[in-house]
Image (tube, rainbow, N blue to C red; front, side, top):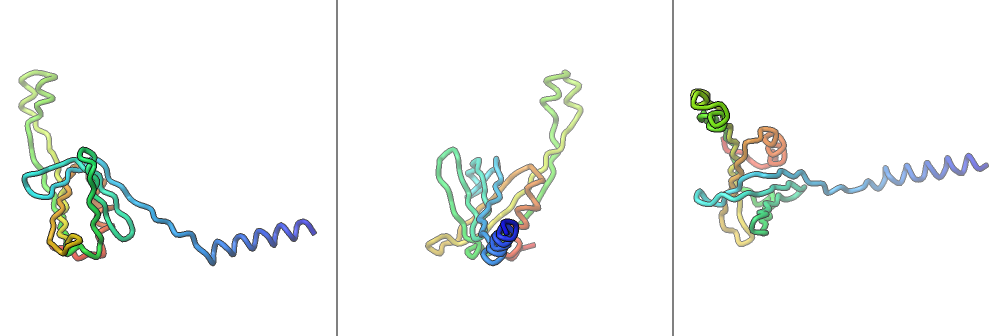
Length: 147
């Protein structure tokens, strides 16, 4: 008798989870990016992607900017590589270190969106960690990309 009540109770709990799924509002967060609102100003920022919007947080100033996906007009991704002299190596091993170069990669997402007043705004996400590229592209995948 006790065993059948436990089984029945377990079955009811299981059916409750199936018929009323838990809604998860998770966010994917990318830290230590550089965000630009125009070409002259570049600020450290953190970007979080939610189900219906993305949020740009500027830790230095304490302000944030919320961009709804429905307000994004279009976006573009570009990357580039730049060869630079490795000054850090030259400081460690001497002048011979200036003969060596290192490659720096830059990944840039340009997002054109409308703000709450309907004005056109630009958000530029600039970073060097290639692990961010695919998740950000996936988050923006439903919006038209300009190639």
